[in-house]
Length: 358
Picture 1 (cartoon, one colour):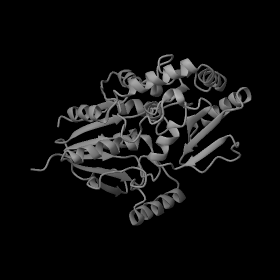
Picture 2 (tube, one colour; picture 1 turned 30 degrees about the horizontal axis):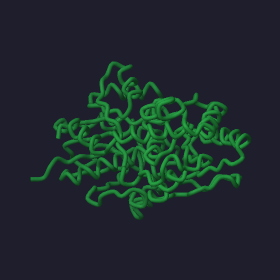
Picture 3 (cartoon, one colour; picture 1 turned 45 degrees about the vertical axis):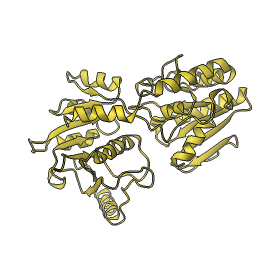
Picture 4 (cartoon, one colour; picture 1 turned 120 degrees about the horizontal axis):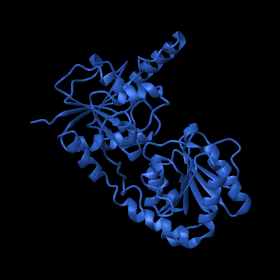
């Protein structure tokens, strides 16, 4: 007898790594391995947004291209189980989406659609991974938290947002892949002058702040070297004391983390950070901004050093402190490595399965 059908609604089709997508793909893998039927649905557009005529033509061309070449498939950057069904549709209107026992909205745009579905026999869930004011206005985001569907959040700060509008949610922390990211170089023997960070073109990632901070550190500590990695093309005019790794696979990324003593993050907003915990798993000390998506994992003076958002001088001083104080750096890295072991995918999957009442 086949088990329930679970449909995850994505806000769009992307051929580049996205943290929130990785989380859902991991859950999808585990559900199909557990015998459930799983479909992921990608829309070409969200119809509640108005588009100019030329933009509509571009969307149509993109839609046809994706149908033909299946650019939405993530196999080049995530090992998604081939038993997970992928469906590309024009929009997330109910008529375009397969019938399911469980529907999961994975972003505010998808929740707006799911709220209109008429399949009363299905369970509806809103999986909240960030405070998505970049997608809709704040009033509409708050309105979505009031929809009559079960809500799941991935961090305490997001639970506070849901409770602020008089609603409740189940909190399930993300897990991490300890087979891919692991300590292969003893913490005390790492090169303290080697720092790593993620490069992203989104302003929310704060790379401009991180670069300014690193320039300050270089002025004081000439031995500094930065391992920069990301999906975009190499930044222009990158100094020779940076090494850029474009589209590193998991094996290479594990080496990058292990060859670094310090990992930095300067984001303005994160739902639940992924790269700092990966770096912790590889024995890095963390210097990052004081935001809810980081502080789920990163605790000031316990396993990390935190600085105010947008303050490149404070971030630089924390990096300098980690380089110059060997005992502190090794202590924080060791604490981070020990603490992160609790965040397993087995635990997260068991909690999500219970939340889905499966």
